[in-house]
Image 1 (cartoon, rainbow, N blue to C red):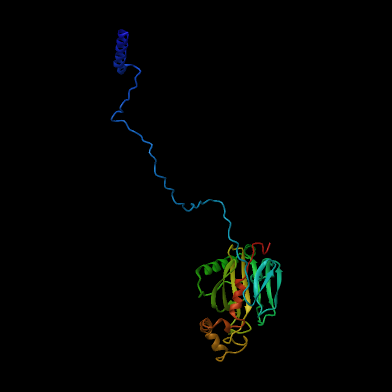
Image 2: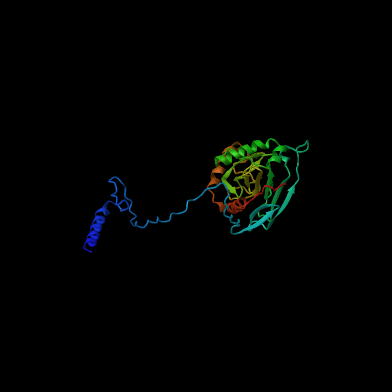
Length: 306
């Protein structure tokens, strides 16, 4: 019995000493000194950037334009339409108007250059308060291409008018005008550049004559001449006008007599232009401002004269 116990004790001791060298015993390896150790530690929350304004993107696609406000006539001005031409007229100086399509009048042996006209529009104010020996209160609208085709010399007039409008000059030696009169333009007073709704022009006070006569209430007139922006139409106006500086009529003899007046005609008209330039708009009759408002209100569409 003692021998068996001794033998068991000896075997247990032997097994205990061999346990450290058994091939299946687990070993823990130390990491090499150069190895990178990645530790999944909790990270601070990511900062959220503040929102920025959206970037404007430009494209070639057309954008919707703001609707144009409708044109409105000013106080004392009545809206009107002659054929397709829109305008306003001064109620204080007219009770309405007549519209006429004037047929073409080509040059011929019986038609002088000043009588030539293309198919055109005439707007005549009715009930106008001033009578004139030579001019009625008419606004005329001419198609440029047709006018030049009938009378090529009109192109020179258009070139001169274009240069005047571009320069903005207010002291020209003369101002190109239609209709063409068989007389000379004697003066250009109160010259003012004036835009209308789809074009630009110039207005002035003038008188035409064939001889040495003074500026008179029955001959002088408010004149306007202009071109549409597209160059398709020429517009002019002849509005009879009076002023205290004018003679009552062209037959009234000047105080110095006709001979002395004729000898100093150039000085007379030069002084008249200077004197009239300082006169207020309401010293003329009709007043210049309502006439200016009328001309500025014109809108001549591309198909005004088909």
